[in-house]
Length: 527
Ligand code: C2E
Ligand code: CA
Ligand code: CA
Image (cartoon, rainbow, N blue to C red; front, side):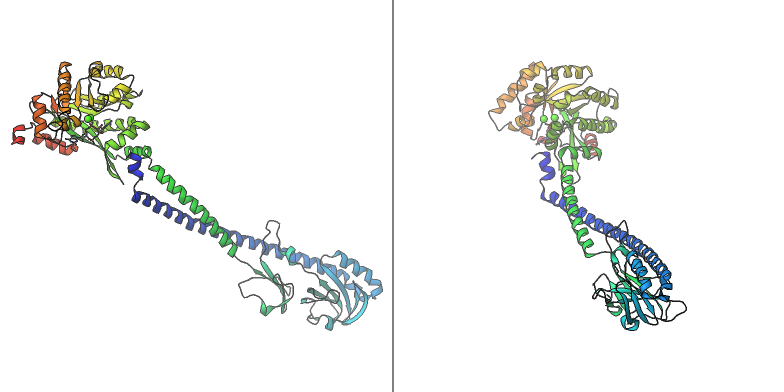
């Protein structure tokens, strides 16, 4: 399984991402709903204040205008209907909202703007009106001219006469009273006069004691016997329904987005870069020995990745991805920095000239920054102390066009080159000569076959003797048993490395190991 597989094809990992996305969606849902509803409430309250102010202004200005008109008409009550009717009809037609004007004398309506002469007792026509009052407003379910259509009766008395004056009946349309230029939505209202109310709930008048019980905002109009009730709703069920629906859709989108973003963050490239940034990579060192003397000749640097969720990820899994994505370059640079940091400590336990074997990816070899990267590494290591050995697989050598020139350059820098995993790839022996190799690392597979596989052993023999003829030093890797060790000793392989001696070790363990085993005692191991 590749790195992507290791990172994402774990159920628990996907579940964790799912849980995180759900939490994000839920938080968003709560936050969005709360903020939206409180914004709607605030806007509603503001709007209702505006409506109230507008209503007060409109009502006062209308009443002032009406009363002024009626005051101008008061002298007409001293005249007969015949001479006044044209006047009051004209005024009724041009005073907005007026249904009729009635001239009243001695308690009798004697002249109507609608029908002219009449003689009706006002107390029967409009029993609710308080005649003694200078100005009174009362609601009436209907008038003789328009039965069934509620009206407001406005009574203006002659200042010096008790039952003489003018009575106006008004058609009231509540909507223009409420609508302000900026808002279309209006609250329910009730205009209360005496014991009745005209409301937006029903076209008929409503007794005050039957008005809805819900909380209403009451606006008393100074000096006038009327008040207006506003049935404001801060949040309507519709507001709540729409907000919840919107939040739900957005939260779902956020959840899905979160899920895929988190999954994507687990792409091999992102994970590798994050690993470098968060210092999740570290080095293990495996000692390499002189076969004859058993003394430590150097070490091989092996990279390790401790992923915060996936735990230990072996290099076989992530190196390939790093090569494919080009991230092998920053990864190797990071490795160089880690080596440079450990180098002073390594110098305390390794002799001068000890070899540091580094696995170099062929993909890095051909990048423009390679030479600069190597310069920087050399500059950070203790001066002239270690001998660097770059381990490059034969596959890489064959595929990289500039390999030959690069190897020449490396040699000029005093860096040796080993062909790694020899025997696993194309295995064209001629490359050994052509590429001017210093070392040949015999693959673990060959070493493993010693004493078991009768086909591989003669090939191994041939490889070792050819390397000798070409004056290339040999390193056997993956040595695990005394039998393998004896075989390699007999064939005079120059260096050995493997679990038989030591597994790859952390810097501290490596230092301790070197202090305790400056010479590997084969004799003691074999008995
Ligand atoms: P490799 O270069 O052939 O490294 C030797 C591998 O064999 C290491 O595995 C080491 O731990 C393992 N090994 C050593 N002795 C024994 C033994 O006696 N028995 C067995 N069974 N295994 C032994 P590791 O560390 O898992 O590395 C695997 C491969 O990853 C390496 O193979 C190398 O190709 C690559 N690699 C490791 N570190 C780096 C690095 O820093 N850069 C690059 N480019 N590749 C690296
Ligand atoms: Ca190697
Ligand atoms: Ca190898």
